[in-house]
Length: 387
Image (cartoon, rainbow, N blue to C red; front, top):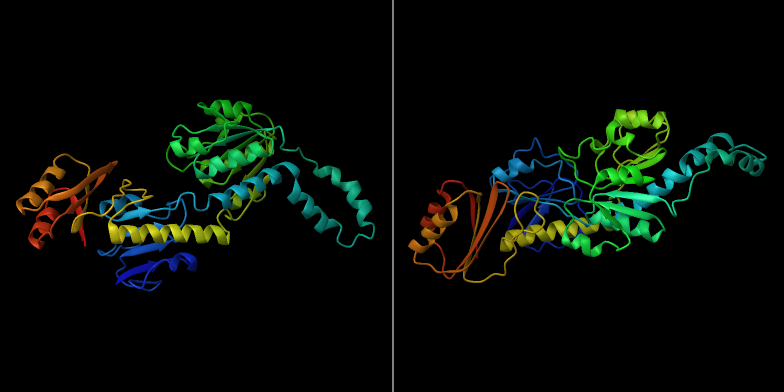
């Protein structure tokens, strides 16, 4: 029986993918794996039995990823599972940024509720809320991952001229990107050319504060900026200043803060990007399937701290080893197995940064003594046998 701890409410559509070999609840002790959405795990003490954490979503800021790697805990996310939900909200953001829809609704509610001449008053006051159409305008999409590609293609279908920037564009993303999207290699081209700019990059040292006074100065007057990725990508003080002086006509964000609430032109959405039943189902199903495949087969798909390793099962036993990515570890492991007079049917080793993952399929069981010998090898973090 495998114990799975849930730290948030996880869609039952995903939970149903666990078989009777799994016990899944929010009160299990010493879990083999953890399912989480938004709960912070930074202060959480991981049990020695914990093999994996699966985030039902793309971002992993709430998980101590490096600490998990050091302890041999594989961290999964679910990229693309909520992409359509976020894409739809970004498109909504484009219209909200352009047409002053929210101020117009607020004006109607605040001033015309008891107006006996409602229709006349509407016609008289509506001109204050005029805004441009998006058709024919230039949109810059910064980050062409699962969400960015969908946004770029959808905006292109709506008649926008789309520019895309991503120095790490994957092959899959390139195949899915519309040929009409102009791929640029310099952010300054987007800043200088685009009427709308939308952010779809992860938060890291290189992207934190990407939208700041210096880069805003490079942009067109009355530019409209959308941030449905991470709040810290935009410097709050700089965007408020740009809104107040009219350089930025609108800022729409799903990652707001209280300082933005009184800023004219700021539209703060309460993190609704993935808040659809379809998205929650998709994320839960993907997260559960990743945990099951890892626990039962040792395969790693969509990990943020270890490499992708997917190998069909062969042989009698499978040994999985998490270790530091340093020389001579593989040769020492092979020596231990050879000394057991056991043949290796299949072997794969891949690395990601400072860490590596090795899988061995053997034609016979490996003794407990041999396993202990592998565990004692310097720089080996975790050893597991799957039968």
